[in-house]
Image 1 (cartoon, one colour):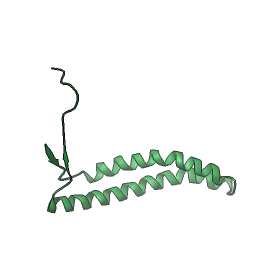
Image 2 (cartoon, rainbow, N blue to C red):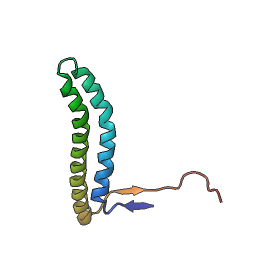
Image 3 (cartoon, rainbow, N blue to C red):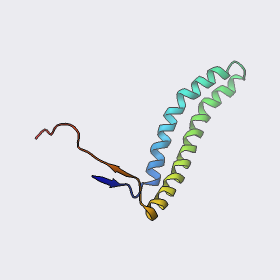
Length: 93
């Protein structure tokens, strides 16, 4: 059975992806801060630990919000993504 996604929630999509990017950014920034601590003053590394994940998440929120809005504009005119669904697993009835 084919289904089509004709609209996505702009704000909800952006919130979810911002949270995913925030969680993803934390270990990357921690590793980068460890490497950079050898060449930069301590205050810069600590500031980076706070600022970079938040900036990464904010950028993701804005990028996904714009992308979702564009998707909705395009999907309204030519249709959305199509995908096929199938039942999996045994029925328990």
